[in-house]
Structure formats: C-alpha cells, structure tokens
Image (cartoon, rainbow, N blue to C red):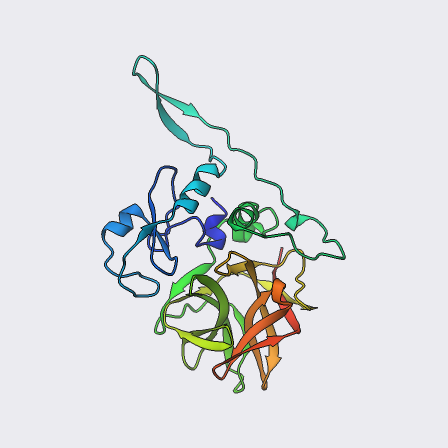
Length: 277
C-alpha cells in the first residue's frame, strides 16, 4: 500500500481515492483540489469547495507521479515480435529522509522547502506503526455522519469531546476539530475560524500527547496536513478559554494554531499527537 493512502490527498484522487498512475491526466479546481481524469469527466462542481469546476491540468503533480518509486506488480510489455509477456518490476527503495533520525538540537524538523520535499517525506512511512500502515485512518464525513470510532482529542467548556479532524481551505489541508454539539469541523486560517460541512475525521488509531513548544514537534509526530505552499502540518492541542482545543502545529510559525469563538489563536505551549507503536 502506498504511503499516500495513509496521509492522503497528495497522490490520490480526492473523489475516488485511487492512486494516480503514470501517464494519467490530473486536474484541479481554482483552489487546487485535485482529481483524476476519470472523475473529472463526471464533475460539474468541485466536490471539496463546491465551486463551478473549470479544472486545469496539474502538471507538477503529474511529473511527481512519474518520479515515484515503482510498485512490485505484474505489467505487460510488448516485445520486438509483438508478443505480450509478463515481467516483474522490483520496487525502488524509499528515499531516506531525516524524519526518522534523531533530531538535531538546533533543528527539530526536516527541511521542507517545496512539493518534492514533502512527497519524499510522505513516501517514507517507516516511522508509522504497522497498524496505521495497513489502513487509511481518515474517514470522510458530513455533519450528520460522524463515525463512532473517531479519535477524541480534546474537550469543550461543557466537557463534550472534540474530535481530531481536518478539512480543505484555500488550497491547504488543515487539522482542526469536530464539536459534538455542532457536529461540524472547525479550522483556523489567517486569524479567523472557519466552519466546514465536508471534512475528514481520524479513526481507529491510538496515540499520545507529548508536550512541546515554540514550533517544535517530536521526531515521530504524525503529519496530518499541509499548507498551500506544502509545508507539513501536525496535530496539536492547547488550552484556551476553559477548553482543550485541537488544532495544527505549524513549525515555521513557532506555535500551535487553534480556533475559538470565531477567532484563530496561536499558542506557544501545546501538545503534539504522536501515534502509539
């Protein structure tokens, strides 16, 4: 199974969840939500942002797919005498990145400067527990359809649980929270809180919360989203206004962003969600 199926959204269609294949046309809406060519034929509006779908080709993602490691699989190849034979391809070893190494005291995170860096990191899944490698832990939801096995990450002032969730906003995939009372996802962006009716909820995984601060994250922190510039985002939580609120840790901003009462708040002291082994 590809690591893209675990982290999601980078290298698979957002509609059918199939991995992109070499040679496929990959389309995107104005906000960057990408779909495969087969799904594009049937789309009139973007399934993520609901805008009219005037899709354009995402040539950068198509090029990245061409460079991804090969899977071990049976393929057909034409021989010079036009006979069809089956050959077996050996997979290319995953690209090693320093996310699984002990962090240097001066730099607690691998350098992610562009999309290819992010893809290299996401392609290396050796730091994830086997239980997560075997399945896709993010479940697509709507306000009336919250799975019972969703992971609880915090609490509101009435002590109702807040679930770990994520949603798209302006080309970014932002970790956030689902409030049981409103049964909607809330994410924050550029000082404001945004309510989302379409989102994903983390399910069927166990983890721990590790205290951290100043934009740092533990070396085995779980990357759960990305910015519009493809900086990786991590699941975090912090106390605010009598709540323990789930949000995102953005290392370049040196804080954990949470949303509360319509406003985005940056917290320098926070906890980071780490998957159990």
